[in-house]
Image (cartoon, rainbow, N blue to C red; front, side, top):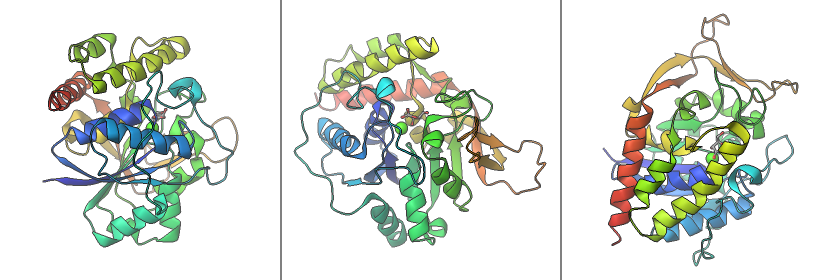
Length: 315
Ligand code: BDR
Ligand code: CA
């Protein structure tokens, strides 16, 4: 059955790959993109979202500008990870299409409320837009079909502080609201995404097809690979966001545990750290399903096959 998906995103190199994977996947009908601050400013992220859609001949998909700042914390962008423009070394022409006038959080509310239990929300940036939408219209909690979130590092080390993952560190208060909202959440933390490394060999396989899309993937991920090599001694790059998207239609890529999960807001060294109550010490009911095991090469094969087929469809 077709999944009606809204991507809430901060494009972003791996966000851009998630947008391409969504467009390349027949299981998905993309209902729109809401953009949030994170890897780059909301302004720049919106331009990136529109440009990637144009590159993939999908300008009919609407893009909505969302929140530009975290709820409480000061802004934190990630130019060292994703480049000054958010798409590494890639240069895309300025988009012809414009974002919609409606605000990102208003779009989430309108779309979810107009199609009860039909919309799958995939959140691959800080959770500010979603938290705002919940505050404004709490009934979206019961009306959204399901929510897939890329965020947190449960047993894994953080990628932004020793304890915290980027999306939850940037807006931990928003993560707190969403985690405790009652929405049906599946979480994809670094525990699984850091096993999914896009290798130089994977890139070379895609580069056998000469196309603007493979060139974009190459120019974007080259920067991302340099970051991973310099900061984390990883050969290749971790493509967190496409894995999260893939779970919407291929859940068997991961193994899950139902857990009570929380995020640290205490303002100390573990600010933004996401932790799970594995031994049920708090006696609180599980508030999400957490992906803790993954078959990385199955995912990568899916990603590569979809990109190849998609790219060739323009030939
Ligand atoms: C997350 O943060 C960003 O750098 C990526 O786009 C991903 O959503 C990983 O921590
Ligand atoms: Ca992201």
